[in-house]
Image (cartoon, rainbow, N blue to C red; front, side, top):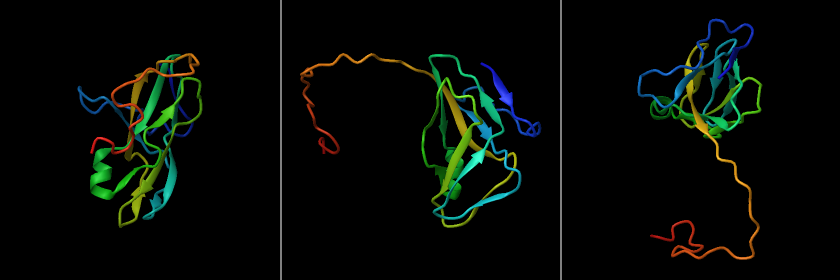
Length: 143
């Protein structure tokens, strides 16, 4: 699928798999200067690239587990969805749930991107849904 490195970001690696068995590609920060995310704050971090996903695909932007466990930093809208018709720069909305300020430096690995197929549905309006043993049991209904 086509990917575009945006001007001024030639030094930022494109998303890449870190191991042969990785499901997600690591995404790198394309900040112009160090950015500080204070505890409780969130910030949109640029990545320096845009993609042209094929129809029927999406990209999910997910947190990196290492940042979460070590620093309490994650993504506020996880997973973030990149639709097939979006052509702008991918941004990563990070939040600091930790106790210390978190510094984002140019080239830091900040998130991961997973490409998935999308199943589009056409709704068939119905007056009644078929019944199941669960019925309308919701949050916590199984104990």
